[in-house]
Length: 177
Image (tube, rainbow, N blue to C red; front, side):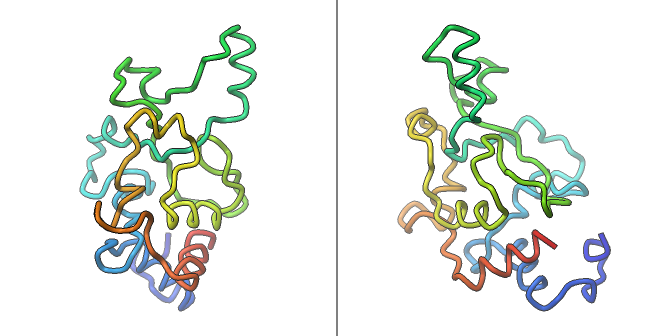
């Protein structure tokens, strides 16, 4: 909160580097986290300070299903049941496997992460985005995986963010602390 209020002395040099990566565009060598994690709760799209784009803040990041989906299949007696995310609410297949962007505030010791709980640490989350390779073939087959995740540097570029190991360390340090 002190940093967000403008106190740059509240962060270490590595955390400041991570903050710069958080807010810098991919074209400028950053991770562009702020495009989805903006606003007071760090869970809004950049430019949506009024909070009016809630419906647009759902993304398919190609993640696996939560382990409880096996239980849901059993209870529903439907071996083909899958958590389709936003599509389950809207009925719109163009929103298959899309899930709401959550806050990145107060993450320390709060894992596992993502709706699937498949990423145990913040480092795992940053490395997942850095790689840009979906883990769930069904989410990919739906055709709704966001290119902002898979191809943030452009469709002709390799997948992922392209951050160096030092950049990953700095971003994790910023997010974790």
